[in-house]
Amino acid sequence: MKQQATTRFRSRALTSSLLVLLIGCLGMSSVSWAQEGQSLMTAIADWRYPEARLSDSRLNDAATINDAGERTIQSLQYSTVMTSKDSLPQVLEYYKAKLANAKTVSQEKGAGGQSVTFLEDSSGRPTAIHVILVNTQTASTTLVISRARTESETHIAWSRYLRL
Image (cartoon, rainbow, N blue to C red):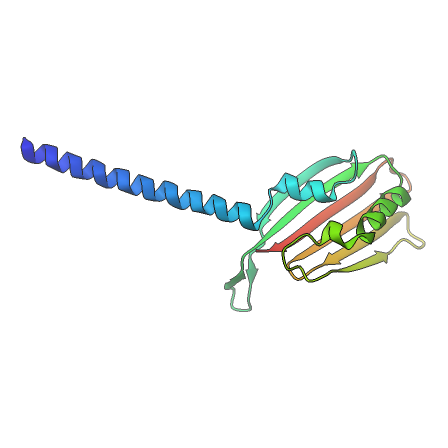
């Protein structure tokens, strides 16, 4: 009887130790996440067009790999699609003004500056398409702003790659 009690005590002690270890590992993981990446909604908030509706918002592992298929860099991929009743020129002007101040975008530690590129592919087409690319040492953000002549809303597809 005494031996069974001792065995049960050791088993419970081992189970408790493993549980504490598991909780500790999970806790460290969430601390690491908080320090290195943003939540999906926080990341979107930095880029959200005022009063735009969101759809298809996602946060994924970006799985940066080399030629051999081995993971090389911890990274995240954020994305969403926003829609607004505002015209395409109004939306485009909002982002141009936002990007005029480099501090607005380049908040990552050690980002080392940024490049901003504007592209347009609308001439002679039924859909106006503008692409904005913003690159830093640790992040790449793409905005694809579009609106067809027959549409009542401007679409803003936003994607952000973040190197952890």
